[in-house]
Length: 388
Image (cartoon, rainbow, N blue to C red; front, side):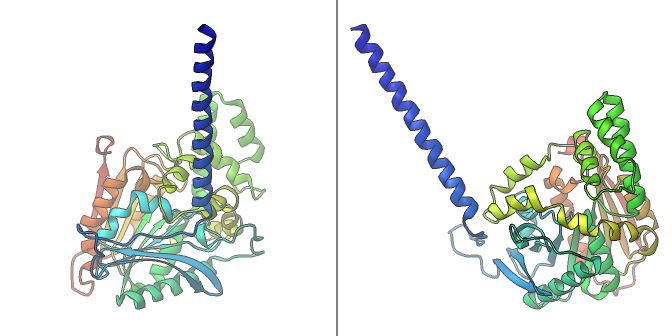
């Protein structure tokens, strides 16, 4: 009797294990299919499941200066002001993460998610990176994208929202084409890059010494302070900066961002490859030119509303430097939004608060008549840790 009972239990356990293996294999197969399947973007539907009239939801490939680039346009009402995201890096697309965390903006703007050269869905997997790339080429790409968006949506002006490297791209474009920009928003604004890198390195080394982390101190001492001699040295510093909380205050590690992105139908294996293996190519190619392009001194006068956003714990581009730049800026309207408990990725760390601010502050400014005489306004807003 005991032997039969034991055999019965072993059979049950075996069937459970077999079912577990089968479910694991099925899950891996679904994941593999998900990674290989082409991206898509869902339509806007009303309460009855019918497409919302006047909405737009398309994922397309645009030929931009000879390069096939990924562009996704989403908006509940295409009459809303167009908003073009300018991601960081260069080479670090945020499209899937933005769709998950900042998708609420699509109810108030017509949002354009553009993957720049060497980024996200635009990147060609396993293809060798170009031998050269210039900031001028990237600005020229943006010129093409802006004009196509304006023509596609029948709008004269767009809102540019840049993050990190995207802020340099946005400032350069807005300064050269003020008639096409309704408002500019810079998150983790670049200013004086050599100074920002020096402050970043000093902070990271200080934190490593305080923590008694011998490996971090050794790595940072080996590469030395900027300007860095090796092309990969900046990434060594960034790894330790992230470890010591100088990139994100909340958990915005690469694995977590990739997990968030996996929830979006706008992501597949190409994004995974780009983030893991190719995201640094654009930075390596443009690093020297970015260092020599000082926005802090040369780009301080704007003909449209300008808003800067940062987290107090941003030691990548430097919240202190961003606010000093903000104080020197001349614009019809300007505002600075500081998240007390965020870092370089403030729009991702506190998305609900950022989305509400974009809707309630930036959107009205973008829709205002810029030709109407109005006294310049400047505002500072701080979002505390209790507002998460």
